[in-house]
Length: 156
Image (tube, rainbow, N blue to C red; front, side, top):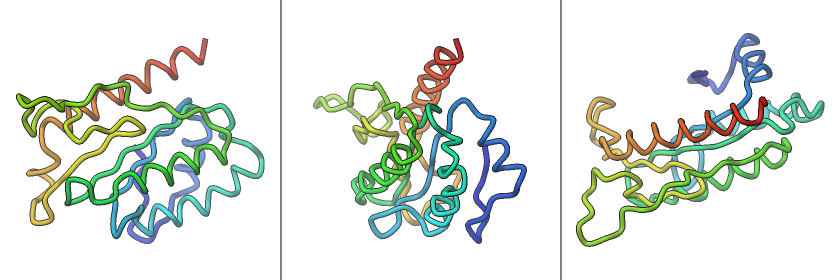
């Protein structure tokens, strides 16, 4: 995991790790209907690898979390898709069916029904230990495994 710092920066070692990676999974909280400003600063800074097509054909995916069930999470995921497409990356969706039956519970896999990317919900007054909920965490694990498997196939 490479964490963008509180000021929206990465170290040179972090940029090198991204250059060496087979896959990049973007992640950011959805705040006020979009990705956090720190993620946007990172996206703008990625214009340097973009110019040299350094991430071309890398596997890309994304996830987001917000306090509300919808919270306009899709606009954040769509921003990540656009960023990946600008970098000529290959986007991978969750590949997970939604938990949308009457018997579904909030802790089921893909309860928030993300297809383009993994979506999670954490109440605004919860601590990191209290959210995201177990179903969202399991969704993220399955999604991460799918991205890793696809990246391994492309290494051939």
